[in-house]
Image (cartoon, rainbow, N blue to C red; front, side, top):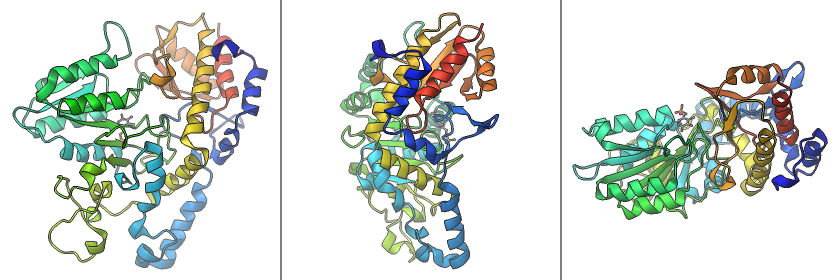
Length: 421
Ligand SMILES: *Cc1c(COP(=O)(O)O)cnc(C)c1O
């Protein structure tokens, strides 16, 4: 494809004309720059607001006002079963059965809760493999889990780094480390897409290797969900969690989501920290002693659903459902490919793209590492109405999101860089 791309505005606009997902951008609110929509490349950090959110939020407020406590059963979307609203659409997004997913809590909290279930070390089997340079919250979570069980992070955590001066981690190295750790390995916990480089890992292969070693495999999918088609059930992934405010456009601090393979989720003896919302629904309001977990991932819920924190999630999942993950992925590969093609034409600025070049090893993010002038480029972009993401010390991350970014957006980004001295 790249040989047939062209670096002209006309060409970019022609691609937009044939884009069957183009109209989805009208369903979002864009920040303004000099009375125009910004070119928004930060969907991997905080997704845009679906236009329907304020109407849907008002609907919930009205039901609360109208029904008070009775809204638990009488609201148009009854609060008692509110989390059920999301299961089917979430299951489609991550490739799971309906009972294997639930929208609940927030990401790091869920990661801690899930590790409480899936990291049950003993003296022989206590090691955790993760990627070097993981998102800090994940590092802190793993570090404190290890300490909680009386182990030392330096001994118990095996971090897989890139080779030599590379930025990308070789999957072969992860597999080799899993095999080497063998019977001492309790858990592999990796970010499905690395937030910094944008590298996507082959989760099926890693899961298989982890299981061969007798360990569990769980993933933080913050940057993968809504970005890359996933098949968690078929890959026999044990657990996963994600946030919904990045690609899933559900608003700052919005409800997170979890996946637990039914093999564990349907086993009432499998350990989980409990709260009343994870209890069997039939007996939940009987307020009796003795936790009886309901079937599936929903048994990891603790508290009643944060309804107002889930309204935008509802709106956004509808858009994903209408667009379809497969169509989004196809556009994503083309759009990211076009952006990459354009950036490679820029020879006068000192940066390299550290995101893998193979589409199978990345989603819709490109990370540009600057040897110098990074901040200057970033500021030039901001002045030009382009919102990208600056990561210390020297990286500009951009996410051309298929749901609302255009090929013209990609061209305009290129144009700013091309026109710099
Ligand atoms: C965004 C992100 C987080 C943020 O965690 P919260 O609990 O939602 O604040 C954690 N881990 C990863 C990998 C992320 O990308």
